[in-house]
Length: 276
Image: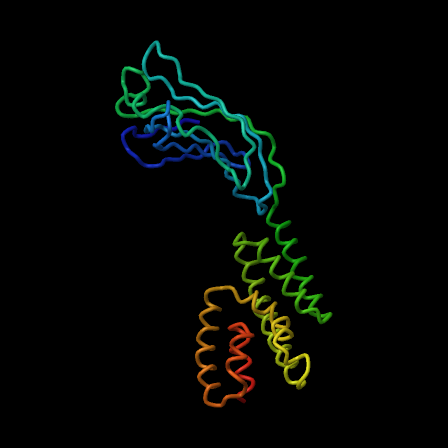
């Protein structure tokens, strides 16, 4: 695959390979500052990037050997060649040289690598078959298993375990599939509401363990952990301001004890209950 770039522009460039391989590869070329012989110099960075666009797992790996070339533009000058071997992964999906050649040498026409303000880069890649790839069907099947586990725990009355299973599913999904993300978020909201209702019912039982600060915190831990989105946080703050003002007028419980022993979510719903 061939890639040409304007030698005097300081922009980052990339190009996809034309081979229908999986995962796909891209060349990345850019000016970079790099230490050369204990001096900070401007260099031409040259990297190979491995870009799987059809996997839903972050555990994929792909071992590749690349021969990277700066093509000579002058008779009698050999191509400038460097090789690299790397196991690409989701955490480290590009590999190459921060200083493939100094910028000054690239622009020096006597070196024979630049012509009409352009250079030509070429790379040959030998890659093994990728491992731990996951298709959309397998991904959604895993999401459904987490979803069903949360529903089963809810049916058993284990709300905390249900919320935990949903949280693990959301972490696994992590914006990979919009449909699955929306499905899990709807389940999370439903579980949080169920947890809050359950906690209010505990309070309604009267004095005892249900009214102790420690018991209340433990009862609402799952709901509080689930209320992590910015939208939910804004709603909680708004409710808290309104309910605290109402509580000051009706004084259902000592305000100092409530604010010191409950989370924002708990305060909002607890004051609402007590003031009715």
